[in-house]
Length: 307
Image 1 (cartoon, rainbow, N blue to C red):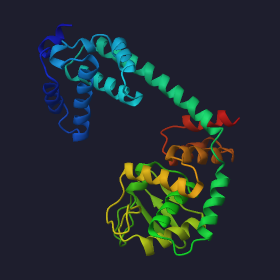
Image 2: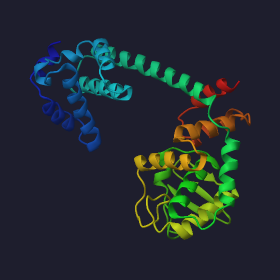
Image 3: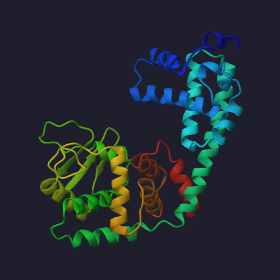
Image 4: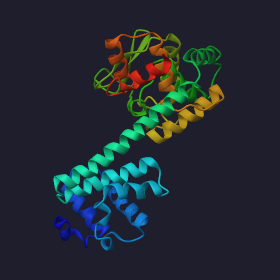
C-alpha cells in the first residue's frame, strides 16, 4: 500500500484540514463529523492516528469487527466506517481497496435494514389501530375548553400526525404561515376556504379532516404569534428544531394517549391504515412519496406483515 506513505504521519487534525480542502463546500457539521470519526478511531485503537500507520484502513472486515466490539451505537459505527471510506477517497486509494470497504459497508447496511424490517414487523403487531387514535383525538378536540398554549400545541402536533398523512419531522418544522399573498410556493401552510393545504417542493396536501382544519385555524389565529407553524413557547418567534419536535411528539402522545409514540411509530400506524384500504400501485407510489419514502419498499414490507 505505497499510496499510504505520504499520510502515515498525519494527525487527526491534519486529515481534518485535508478533508476541508477536498470538500470546501461541505457544511461545518459534515467536517466536524469526519473529525469526530477519526477521534473515535483513536479511542477504539487506544492510540493517536499518527501512531497507527493507517493500519485501521488496511482490513475493512477487521475494522468493522472492532467497531462492533466497541461501546458505540450501531448508527455511530456505520457513520465511522463511512467516514473511513471517505478517507480512502480523499487520499486517492486504489479502486480495489475502496471497493473492498464499500462491500463490507453494503453487507452490514443490508443486515441492518433486514433487522429494522423485522423489528418493524414485530412492532406492528402491538401498535394501536389508527381508528382508535383518531377517535381519541377528535374527542379531545370536541371537548376543548379554553386550553393552555401547551395543551393546544400538544393536541395539534398529535392531530396533524394522525388526522392527516404522517410526514417526516423535517417537513413539519419547515412549514411557515405566509403573512401575505406574496409568499414562496414551498414549505408553507395556506388556507383555502375552510381547508388548509400543506405545500412543499414535493408535496401538495389538502387537509380534509374538518376537526383538524378547525384546530389549525384556532392555533394560527389565537395561539401562534410567529410565521412558523410550530413553535416551542407562546412568545417564541422561531420555529422548533428536529430535536425539540421529537421530544414534543413523545410528550404530546404520552399526555393524550397515556403512552409514548414517536414519529416513525405514528407513520407505521398511518401506513397500516392506508394499506387496509388496498391501494393500487399508482396510489401506493403516491402514498410512499407523501410519507417520505424514496420508493415503495417500506409499504411493500408492511403489506407482507399485514397479509
